[in-house]
Image 1 (cartoon, rainbow over the protein chains, first blue to last red):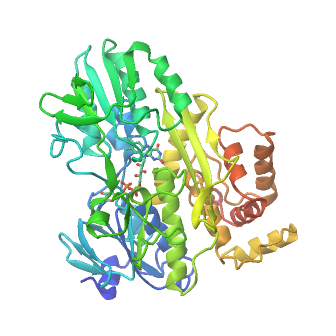
Image 2: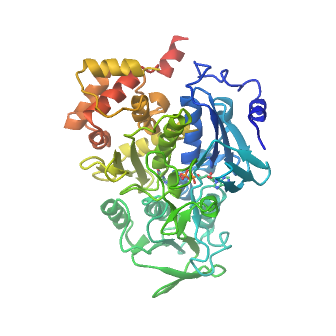
Image 3: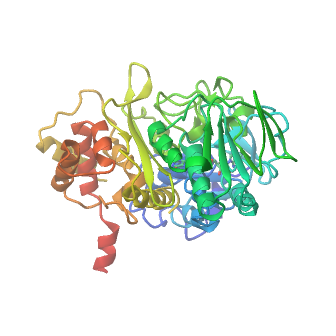
Length: 422
Length: 108
Ligand SMILES: Cc1cc2nc3c(=O)[nH]c(=O)nc-3n(C[C@H](O)[C@H](O)[C@H](O)COP(=O)(O)OP(=O)(O)OC[C@H]3O[C@@H](n4cnc5c(N)ncnc54)[C@H](O)[C@@H]3O)c2cc1C
């Protein structure tokens, strides 16, 4: 069990409370306690940093993340398309500890006990918390597609960035000219609504330049493109014969060895098969028995992001059941991180959470190496429904794909990675 | 903490604060919704405008120009319409009261 004293000791001299650079006020803001954060992705890393920054270091934060460094899903489609390298989307967690005094634990959380307020880890035993933040991202629903489970080497998803991203890139490089790249998109909701269509474009962009006799087959379980439909339709048209979009293509089974996709009415043999499996909240949220909607996503209270009926457990990011028109995006997970950090600091001081929170979203998608399209929205808390609701007349889409927004998209990535991790 | 400044500025601007008990960190929280793109506390790493330390008047003018279409934008004309004028007052006052990290380095 990690006690407060162990925690302080482990922070070492440089990061002892009050001497962490950036904290003008050594006494902090009055909030006291230990917050454990599970998952150092878009939601969790943001929450960890903002809890330390806004409490002026008075709240102790332990971040438990299984991976040694952060690898971003946003921009990972550019790695798959050969326009960026995996190093370009990899960021160290070191600043969270050295600059902000977050205690980093590289480990897997295997269980939580919401009554005793402890989490169990694979290697570091059990850790006590006053409040828990969980931003575990998504997991793939086991058994949803026959033949798929356990075969992610043969049939990569690359829907969690890291080795899977590099693997899918390698498969694409090894594919012969004239080959078929088939990707499957599950029924919505899934992580990053525009993400699959961006990937289709960037794979087609690569093949057009390097293997022009090849084909991109986009097998969508949905009846239509799920985000920026008009803009992606136009982009797809620009790839001509090279890219074929097939709606209402529900995947029943795969033969991983032969890379065969069995659809409801068709069977397709691909040279590279990229299946995005049906998704739900990260394993730990399911395993912890948090309240789920549709058996998939965690039901939260929108003023605190606490799981309904589970005191002290705040759930962020892709894992939660979204409010109306709220996408599962890294941008939104970062906003959840700040909303939760503010609420937790109030609650630790015995204050009510902010009654009027606002969150907003922007998602940029590359349609080729140079041109980008966006979707944006602003969501204001609506007391009547108890949910953040999209503001009518705000937000929207790019009028058309353009080069200016490619610069914005890369600047977005640089700034949001810093907002989480620097 | 610059909340007091924020409230004074808002008061001077003649904006009525809501009768509902307002969170003491509302300005900070609202400004944080801009940080994904504009950097933590409004200190951008480049490619987006730094908001920290900009005069409130200038920031409000820019936002208004985005809203009316006076200033062309790729995305800000859509985002600005999602915030109320009171919220934009709080946000701009808060950023105006931040120190620009770049300036600090320049001064060294
Ligand atoms: C190809 C692609 C492109 C995308 N493009 C964009 C984009 O352009 N813009 C955008 O805003 N969003 C984009 N997204 C979506 C974005 O990646 C997600 O919405 C975002 O990552 C969600 O954040 P999160 O914190 O919920 O989960 P994640 O960022 O996935 O973080 C979860 C973390 O928790 C860790 N974890 C989980 N369980 C445990 C455990 N038990 N113990 C320890 N650690 C654990 C994981 O290792 C992971 O690091 C894209 C996604 C994909 C796949």
